[in-house]
Image (tube, rainbow, N blue to C red; front, side, top):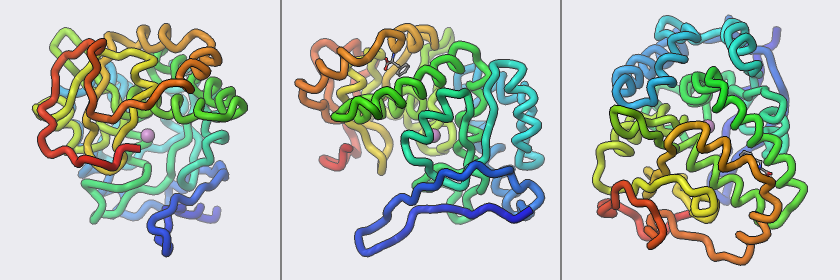
Length: 295
Ligand code: PHE
Ligand code: CO
């Protein structure tokens, strides 16, 4: 078997540009070098230690159920046996970032794309695009949760629809993904916990999002989230907190078509702004925030 390509962003005269790829590939497990397994082991141990008391309990439980361990990079086909039985999801191997519509179509069919390659040793703390550690460690455990699994599929179907609608629909929908699937917090009996994969795969943000006085922590509100810009180059200025996954699923059940039309007439909200109508759990002090750069 030929080893698939490792598709990363490219440095051009216009700066870093993302490169998209659509191939679905078989995980070239035998081609991982000892250094790749070592990166997995280091990151796995480091995050698990940080996350036992910071991640949503169902994240940790399901990661264990899946048999993920520091011993070796997991095999997609072994995880798939568990996943298919639990929620009907399966992992598919990809070479890098997918075009948006391709990504939505996979989700709508309960296929979760996982980048086959893992970051290098000099990228342990930060990498600007998804790799195997982010995709597998961060996203896959919650696909074992039935309600979250349904939310992800519904999101994919919603994305296919939003792509057809055009206009700002995709911008609104992407913000929802960002503030839930990637950077969401959830209430638990023991206090706030992390369920967003962008946080779960980051050492710095796992601590920052719960312990720093800097960011806002605000109760989830669908329209509010869909209007809120975000940061891709620094920690988030605001985290939105759900009560449980059912809240997310129910809030997003209605047809978004009229919602997109309503949102089109409203200004976007800067990432760090707090509104009078917000259910503020904790108001951030804004320490260390950069003035511009929201997307
Ligand atoms: N109900 C949404 C729509 O009609 C679909 C969706 C579900 C979007 C879940 C996001 C999350 O577009
Ligand atoms: Co992600």
